[in-house]
Length: 452
Image (tube, rainbow, N blue to C red; front, side):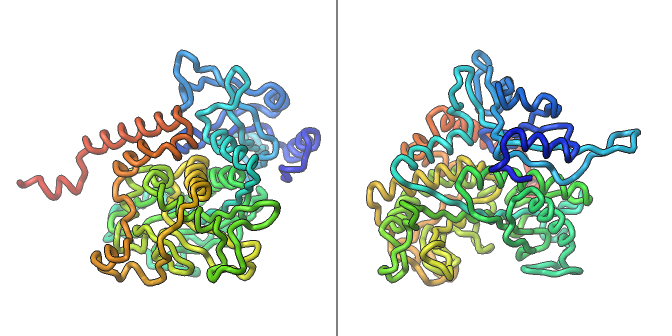
């Protein structure tokens, strides 16, 4: 269904033509989980006019129980019909369901300062006032496992499929194509999809858009992947590293900035084709990267991906073509329009609204303070010794969530962009998560220490 151009009357006509009976009103909590309240189609007009009330204290990070009343206001431009039907039990009938993303408001009619979507919108509004327009694209990777068959270690992996594999080696191709087909029916323009470097890992990329739209689409991509995979007897997993000693899922993020309709990151006179804005953006991103990583890699499991030996971006450096660096300037046949900055460290467990806010805030601080980045590194960093990296001034990306949380606590640029209330909740919740993990006893510990 066309979403951006249809007015309310046309939207209802299309919903009725496709026999939609229920609307999922969707929004995201502060930790990045998609939430839904389901209403019959007959209630949708009222929802658009007045919103839907809900208990914000039951949503992670949203409200205190003493002031919990909040409202969901659907954004009609995000309305879409799911491309699958649900049978009515005991009847020879089926019905469709649609989803629409909502913004969260207080009872005073203000956008919630704890809603991730509203946080990103607020940051972009301030940037827009200064003439800056951003675009974002992502490349999420995810696992597709046959249900009930998730290996715990590499030794349990039986598949052989690798990078760009084809059937019959690529056992997930049918499921992946079904996921992509569903997204295309929902007007999410997937550009390509393929099998990744190890069994079970898949990747897709979809067309760039403004940051809010890209974050919205990423949340829908995860929902659709999980839903379609389940229909095929598979489980779509966006946990970065579910298998020990195995490759993990990343999510490279590409950013560009425009001013007065022109790509502000491009300069044809520069030997690398980069403007001062692009270089300063990279400088700001590097300066704030430890705090940013708390939001782009927000789970304990995230840091089991960011380890040596798996080509993960674990070194704080940037380059033009070098894929061993953290930040890269991808090649393009149309640099005037498509020059962009790629951050390679994020993973799909990130809340995209907050991750994009943090990255943009870091880059904009670099532009405002004219922060020069270090010299670009075009050599393969994976082959460098620790001594060589030290001589070149290449620092490691944080190894643990604890490091990034401490950095976030002391980084006023990032916490102010996210907002003090949301930042405080996130930091406290993540420290509690670390404490719970530290109190757990793993199978590895039992194997290692049971006979001491």
